[in-house]
Image (cartoon, rainbow over all chains, first blue to last red; front, side, top):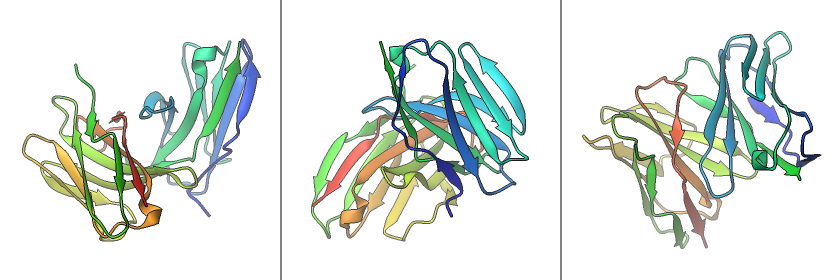
Length: 110
Length: 113
């Protein structure tokens, strides 16, 4: 069983829709949770970071961590065509080594 | 401030050969991590360097090695290439080890034939 599971999609939504991206994990010791966005032919860029449980909001993006269910989510409100990318979740025990999901490909249709 | 740079961007090698990839971190960043990205496995951690010392190593065979220089630039080497080594190799830099704020380079696309 992989440490981090992520539905690869692809996910296709109309512009303006709310997007929900999710990851599950198996190791309850994970403490740091991150979401990255990766455009084609580019490296991943950090979008959101959460420590332990709870919610975090940044503009149109909201990250949620549910440690009891070992489940994290990224919500994108009012999605834009520029949000079309692959979204990767990542987790860490101590910040020294990161475990990534395989990524979900998102297309926002104008 | 310039971002993380990786050279070369694309590389084609033959099975059995070796390859060296280079990474220049963001100015002032002293920690460099390397990842392998494939469609099936996603990003997998290779190793992390700080102050010219390897701090952490992922679950990869000894054919994968790396080093860091005094200016924080890093190289990774893969010897005796296999077809399965075809992947995007990403370098990430951060100010200090253990920081969640990693900045990735564009990667080197390695194809092994």
